[in-house]
Length: 257
Image (cartoon, rainbow, N blue to C red):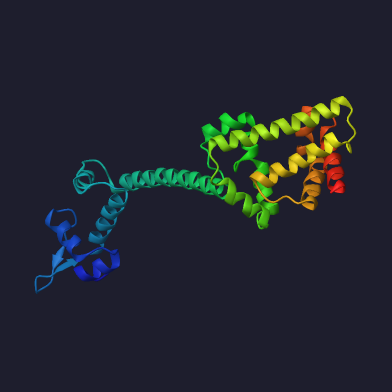
């Protein structure tokens, strides 16, 4: 190739002419020749050295460090290239890790999570992952209902909830399901006032803390308790048959209203 002027090299390498002059002055990248008028002229070998310098700069090495690397005896260009490749792959791995962490944080915020992972575990224990964004239930729920007004309203509300709010929410929910289980053990009919009042309290809990849960929506939620084996297992683990009992109680309460 023909030798290139400093202006041409600056445009090609996306650096300033002043930078190239500085590299020349400190002996880092010196043009091999000059024109008849005394202007710097860069050869292909000069450009190869500049490319290597710019790689090291991209890796955040200082100019003194780069000079030491390029002048180190026994450190051939191929060896330096492999080292740059290794360092870039390590940076890529770190960047990918950061991106993954940011993706998770953005998803958590989108899901309305305002607690740290430590606080999540403290409040919800081993079930924290089922409640928040990194749990399969929450991710699936977003896919199914993410465009609904109820989902968006729930996100708006929960985004501002504190740890104390979540403690109160969990206490209410636990008390409600414990009362359902006690009613089941006591043989209360699903259309009794006791059970229907528990179903109404469950609906009002959702409306108070998450979204306006009308009776048709409450029926649909109850249907999911018995149609989705994961929800069924969660309730039946507390008391055998509890998922269908809660389902029937919610439907009876909706019929009452």
